[in-house]
Length: 243
Image 1 (cartoon, rainbow, N blue to C red):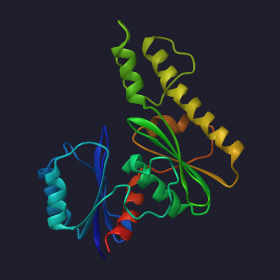
Image 2 (cartoon, helix red, strand yellow):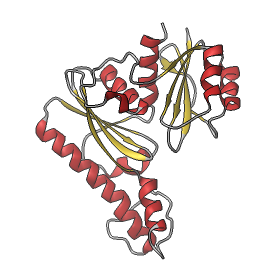
Image 3 (spheres, rainbow, N blue to C red):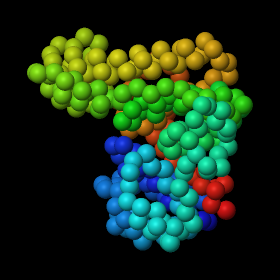
């Protein structure tokens, strides 16, 4: 079975997953720095035949040169072959990460109205209808961004670490901040889901991203939580672009 290296350079986290055939083989690899040396280490460790890169940040062009020389490589962009259409105003501006999430939704939940919510540096709402059209969605600040902004734009509020154990009524500064941030985000997400449900039938919600663990326990809506969703989308896109 072919081995495929799927790499995701996000704003905060750089990660990789290795597929053996169509299944993820082993744990997700955390990449400390987006450097050619770290990518070379992954290639030497797993010996992939194929690779795909999703990046929303500026990175060293040598990384792509290395992947091209050692594997059958595809860089995800608006010209990639994907299993959906994007009838939006400027399809070239759709982030690579959002393309991968939309591809995963279509692959695993075809012919459904899918809302994919990614909880990363930003919260992205990505809507793909039952006709496999990516219509867009929304973007709002992520958890770390909200916590940091309260620390940076006030004189006395501390920087608080995320936590899933959050009281409704905060009893000190830390828990007040967590209640407002975590439960506020949960209410925002539930509100968006309710609005989509009012408009669309045959509706499905997928939740993914690094802050999934903090928010999933506080959501009322029925969701399918999958922290590996972006990699499954990257693999699906690699299969039709790395022929």
